[in-house]
Length: 355
Image (cartoon, rainbow, N blue to C red; front, side, top):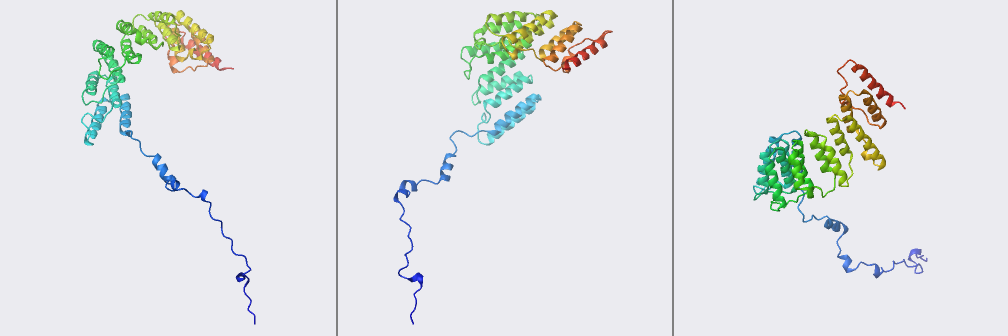
């Protein structure tokens, strides 16, 4: 009996295919085989830098100081600053370490706003002393503002002279920002004699920015003094310097005219304001709610109902909403026709709403 060989065992059956040898050009070289995996490379990129990490505790403390300053809670600020210093000492820092200049500048601002300039001076001396965090231009600006508010003018001028002679610790630079805080304190107190002396002493520094900010401050000072129309001379100086008055400049001049009961002059400045805005195509120079509210106050004091109604209609066509401040700025009451005037005013406001 003949035995049949299975087909798959037949010698004539084709041999199974063998895969070709791998191409040597595609094999990883020895240099690439030693390369780290991608994950390791990513980790190496995210390695921490050598710079010191941020201090979120100090940022939160600064924000906390600013919030307490708005509420005039200076004792609470000093308690929390003292606790932060004690925590820094417990961590191994020195007695004067732990708080940087930014935090201490916020504390200085709190002292000035809360009226404790003596404490501000003590902290300033501690900051610039040995072991302190140091002072900068912001520190000097805050201290000068506080000295101006406390009417310690001689001390403030001594600090400015030391900065000018470059003998102050921290090497602050004279700048308009540093001086304007002190200047504004003098203006708020109505001390125009010393304010003008400060401007004359540091005129070159104050004018280096070629801005109308300084002139606007001086005009505000004349309004607070007994000579509000002195603001008009400041406007002439602005024009001589080749500068452009801005909206605040015109609003301040109009306020000076109203305070001097020069309503016709205030109306003329309003027209100049609108004409200049149209000529220069500058919408930022157009009258705003402050402009019209100031005029309404003056017109109300002069019992000029016709001009009041005219300004109200102009406000509505701008459009500028008449809020409670604008209504209370028109004291056209106190006589027999007051009710009729208020009715006419409401009627004019309603007409301005119609298309």
